[in-house]
Length: 515
Image 1 (tube, helix red, strand yellow):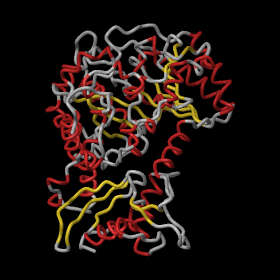
Image 2 (cartoon, helix red, strand yellow; image 1 turned 180 degrees about the horizontal axis):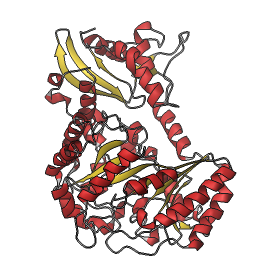
Image 3 (cartoon, one colour; image 1 turned 90 degrees about the vertical axis):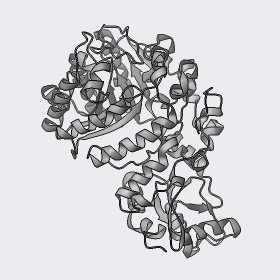
Image 4 (cartoon, helix red, strand yellow; image 1 turned 120 degrees about the vertical axis):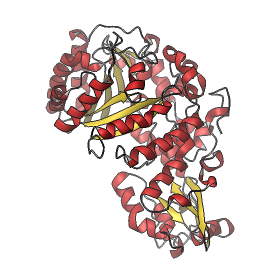
């Protein structure tokens, strides 16, 4: 083993603990010691990231997307791994124990993809959890030109009739549930704060009646989210929120302004300060990025740091590309960044954000694509009473699955069945991808309604992890002291040979292929 932490040492010291802590209910990879018939094979979900070698030979940072294990391998580790291709080493061979425990190697009769699919489908069809997005109003006080909902938003708030129908439905289904998870959405949901307050009290009463856990989250532009409102939301069991910035003030105010044209950055920043200082609500700052504001994002982070938002336990930042996902926002296609260009920049932004104390170390998600849209008990309720499966369809009434007045019929609709019948495991590109455990198809909308998307960003389902997983994991390893910055070499960059082919040639996207 080399001077740096070896695969076995890293597994013993941290990987298994991380798997237990961060992936509760995950896969069990340990093989019984008395198994004398099965032999070990290489996991199909290993990603090898070459790093600078040492006096003993080559080295790699190796990550298993199925278990979350990652470690620095020296030449001895690599040789042991490669021996599996030349000889049948039994799974109880002591030389393989740590590799097998971490999931880098599996027994020859293991169907990794099959096991992943079972776990994915079990989560999708979890009958005891309902994830419901409720829009009390679709009106918005902002006039963002790239809004996927379009500029012409309805202004009517949710009527008492719709609210009553929702409560009647919940009273009927809650006895079968253990968790009701609510996401408040819009438009700008805080323009319907009274509805949020009234519905929350009644939904919590129903949850108490049926012994169901209640949780809530809100997506807001932040303009009305001052300390007083945040305290009110916290009493209503809203534990987290998402607020968007489009760069520092000079960039944000050119893009996310009031209907009157007035700026919004300073008020939102002031509000966030009140939220994180006066409540325990978790604030997730989303930063939208395209060609117009990409050079302004670090200025935003500098400003957030200067305001004392760094190293806060209830604030974090993440980045998202502007994409032409719906027909209402096709006009933003010309300013959208290509997948590779965005991914390269995003990795550097995460490094900058971590060093500024505004985010944790990058760690690939597990089953990111298992969103409410593809879950049996996932619903989006609009003020009109329309029911949808996905946030991205709310501006198109033809894509609704039904109404809250006839919820049973909605679950039997053709559109609902289309969402539920879709699976990344039925797609050859997804099924053969090494980051399938992390991604699981990412955005199902881009498959189910691919005719609504435009351009590489809007149409290509693969998330940025597909194009920068190596760079993000290298940041994590460097900051954890597993490697140094000098260990990163040109060959360390994410490539298709490292992670597998993307959808640029699968028929979902027609255009310049992303490497």
